[in-house]
Image (cartoon, rainbow, N blue to C red; front, side, top):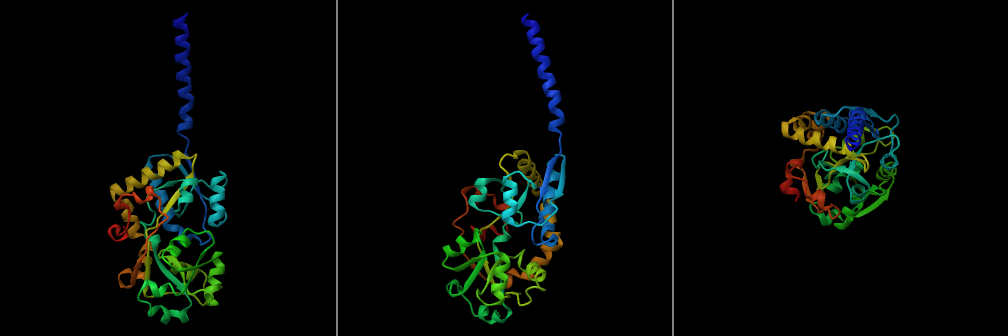
Length: 293
């Protein structure tokens, strides 16, 4: 009798494993939210995401959500497990607690390299700034709820918060003096909004730098997708394909050519909001780690 029960148990286990196999082989559903900036800005992060998925060895379906959405909406959809399964954004302690971050910076930390969107009439004003103290006498703008607000205020900078497009209008009306944007963001955004906001320019001489990373985020219950993206990114670094994509992507090359990092007056400030886990990211994954930390 005992032998018969053991046989039944063994058959049940085998059948369980058999029926589980198709589930394990199910492609990962990777649905990203198209940003309100359009495909020009999406190009590199999405190509990097696809590279990571290919390197992961997992089967996957990569799709775009059909309508552009704001960052706040994207994270709401991600949290509620609706519409999208991955989103990339500048990190914060709050996001890292609510979602699973893939802690390999998408832009190698260059999101923390900030140039300014300004009114073109104000270039001379910024040309005279040679210290952080002088910059602190001007008014910056940042998006409502953005983590950058706390970073800038921690270093004594004046920050006004408003919705994104309101900030562009405030620059034109000179209600704020500058809108710090990542070097991957400033020039494409000025070009994109040229028709609606023609009195915008990228400031030519200054660079504000703080440790800051943009990560891929997934729902906390989606460990499989998190692990696939992370595994793929690590493998892409190991075989050189990450840096090949980074250095050769037209958007990245155009970004580096336009901002001329080495020619700008650089002001470094700390980021008091970085989590211990993000601070422990290996140096190989950052641009200029010795200058950042």
